[in-house]
Image 1: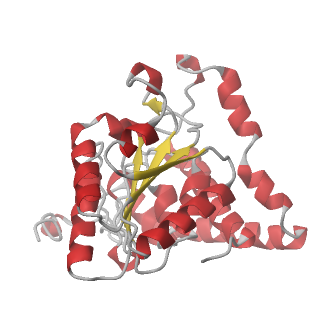
Image 2: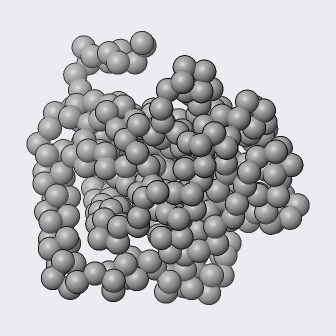
Length: 314
């Protein structure tokens, strides 16, 4: 069993938050060449889950994947270069924000279509089991994915075959701007998943450590052949569904709901648990890394027309 590393959690959280705040700052310059879906507010899930993983574990993400990738300690420079559409990017500038991919850290190629990574992740877990490979498959998805039929087909298959997969549902309660109670009866994804024989648990905590503890227990159980598990991780998306802006003007949720989430920001809590000198050192180091990554991206070249089909087909 792993132990929660507060300093590591703070470092990863700060890296994700500051990276995405920098994306907001730069987006209107048109230097970033793809749409972006920001994870600000949802970082505790990605950081908590990632701290429970081993290097052999495999990640399937979604279009809101910056936090998943950086928490997995993917290459910061290559992520930024990918956002810029440059050849130095993790997919040579061809994938952009919504299709992040880096097999060197077992971060599988992402699809921007809702729920499509779920059957892919289940298929990979099927392969893992029947080839007796080490490594648990982690499948991140949002609550909107649960509205897709393929989601439940995949859940059924994973449960039937007792596959080594952890489903991590980041439930921010909104599919774009539509609340969960307008899309399904009841408020519990866990209760629906349980009906498929899938061990499922809701994590209501706002703290990174809560998500770490749930993921750590689940992954250890899966590695001891317990079969698949679902964690319904209650969280909050602070920014617009897509793009760098805010969405208060749409009035799809109350100001109180959002303000309460911001007030309970776990980044501040983690910072309060660390020596002040260490906080300053971490912040300076990460700020420098981000600035270096942006310069690296701006200095890199765009892919040439001769390689338009390279790394696309096989």
